[in-house]
Figure: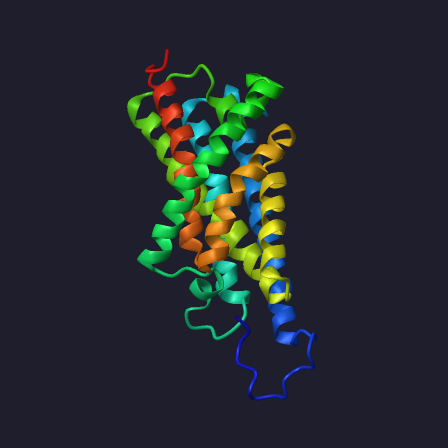
Length: 256
């Protein structure tokens, strides 16, 4: 929602207030800073081992590569949003990221996440049948393929894929970037489509980009319909539960 402009004359129809434009551009920079943080941390973890192949990393470094880049990118973006976002400073970070503890919104996110499985599971199966299982697998799946881990490490990987990665990604894409485009005056449906596209391409898995776009539909709708980031976080976590569970079973040797 636009901020209170009663102190000065309202702008003509269709003209974006300067403060809104500045806040939007600042948050675009914040989003890019979060993405660069992710890239830099990933490179540092890989360089610490001396190999660019994540599948060759020892368990500890692989878990670090799974958890640290996205988490630190989200933290950098959230903190910067609190400093550079629009509106009053008090509560700015939570307001700009659209974080509100509302059980109804969370229930909507849960419902969309569960309902979205009716779309995403057939889409994933069809995509795998078309391009082949090797080509359809994710970068995380490739890195953990054929690896058995200690139970504690396997549980950390499970929680990272199920809970941590979705929350961090939502802060970046449907938190910071979504709010930046709102500040710039974009229509909310255009924001929904744009953030879904950026989310899909930002994974840098070109063969999986169409599938990621389908997966992002119920997640983005949760944010669109509730205006609450927590709803999209829950929808994303529901979407990631089955892959995370499969990863847990595989890395503990419980899949045939």
